[in-house]
Length: 439
Ligand SMILES: [Zn+2]
Image (cartoon, rainbow, N blue to C red):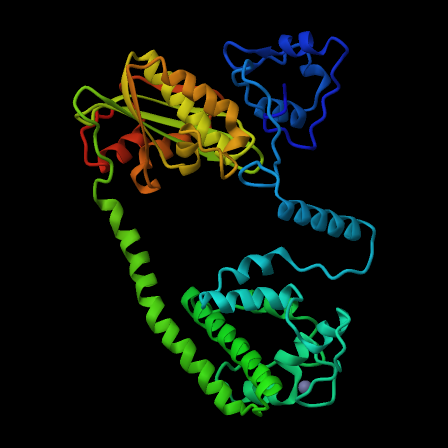
C-alpha cells in the first residue's frame, strides 16, 4: 500500500497486527486526509509531520516498485553504482577513517563558474582526483615516474602541477591578479578554491570575472604541461599567461553583455501585464506552492474569468514532503475550489513543468514521487466539462505566488470568494486587469 507513496527512509511506523484496519482508521480515503487523533498522543511533532506529508491517493491503484535514486524512478546500473559509492563514502566518514572530504560548497560553486563547459568539467576533474597527474597515475598502478617532468624535483600532484611547480609560480608572478599562493600554507586544491570563492570582491561581477580568468589560467597551465609531455614543447610562462588572458577576455566579451542584458530586462519586465485572461466562458485557475526545508508549505490559488475579474482564491498552510508535492497540491486545491464555485470550464496554469508533464502521464523528473496526487488530479479532471493544462513562467504567476506566500504564514485555509486581501490586490492590478476595490 505504501510502495509508491513518497516515504522517507527515515520513517518507520510500528504497525499493529490488524494493520489494514488500523491504517484505515487513521486514513480518510474519501477526503484524502490523515486522521491522527487516535495516535497523536503517541507521536512527536516530527513524526506527525512526516505522516501528514504522505499523500493519500486513489488506493485502488495498483502498487508498483520505484527506484527512488533515479529521476525517472527506474533502476539503472549507473545509479546503482553511484549509490554504492555514496554509501561507501558515508560509511568511511562515519568510521572515522582519514578520508579527505570536499566541502559541498566547492562542488556547487565549480558549476557556477562562468567559463567554457570543458573548463568547468576540467575543474570538476581536478577536485574529483580524476586529473591524470603522475601521482594519480601511480596511485592507479600505472607504471610512470611520479616526479614532475618539468622540474624533476617533486611529486607531480595536482597542487604541484597547477600551483607549486617553479614555472607555474612564474606564470602567477607575471599575472595581474595580485593573488599569490603561499606554498607553506597551501594544502589542497579544493581548500584553495573554497578560500577563493569566500574572498571579498567589490562586486559580484568582479568576482565572476576573476573566477573566469582563474579557470582559463588553470586550463592553459594544464594544456602547456600536456604539450610538454606529449610534444616536448617547453612552456613559456609569459606566453601561457598571455594566451589564458586573451582567451578569457574574448570569452567574457562574447558572453557577459548578453548575461547583463538578460538581468536588466528581467528587472524591468514586471511593469508590463504578463498574465492573460482565458477565453469567453472559461475560468483561469492559477496555482503555486511555497515550500521550506522544514516541510512547512503554502498553497496559493487565484481564479479569474475572461474579463480578468477576480472570481475566487485561497491560501492554505500545511506540511508537504517536497516543493514538488506542494506545487501538485496547489493544483489540486485549485481544482477543488473551482469545482466548489461551479466553474466547469477551466484553464489551469502552474509554473511547475514537472507537475504539468506529470498530469499528462510523464512521470520523469521525480514526478513518480507525487503519483497519488497526480492521479487524484486526473480523477478531479473528469468532474469538469473541460480542463486545459498550461505551464507558465513564474513571472506570469505572481498572483498565485503571492497567495502561496500568504498560505505559508497561515495555519489553516483562507478562502476569498470575491474580495482578495490588499496585498493580493496590488499584484492583481499590476497584472493590468480589473480588480475589486479594497474595502
Ligand atoms: Zn614541477
